[in-house]
Length: 196
Figure: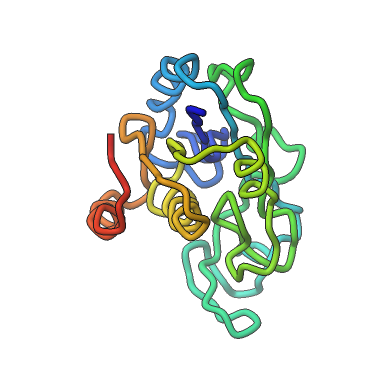
């Protein structure tokens, strides 16, 4: 079954959003173009409570993009983004959603951050995505979305751990830090990921 997973194509990750990826909105037309080629289209949404531990605004004397140790883990503090029910948490209005069969929400636990579409960052809680894909007999997943170097990267890593073959759709993926993503690309290629 040909499967596409669209990661976090939400307004807060687009230009003008709370945690904007440069030219992030440029991926939308490509995502729209490719969706009809798939038997199964899935999407993720970052879906944070307002008091989420990853928001710099919830830590006195800390600014966005600073690091802080929380519960023994190094945590990047982010600008507020993708708050549950907010405009910024919505998909880009030009992205077609009629092909999307299911949406998996992540980052819903205020006490733990969650980059991957499969698990939170400490691998304590599953989103149910792996089980869903296995029940549908998916072997290969094409992944795209925002941001390439964070949520897409960690989604790919977990997909590999779950024994899926992964292809990343480059035209439909943008990164917060492109240099970092270029390094990650070499690492992922060595692990068998295709970039198409």
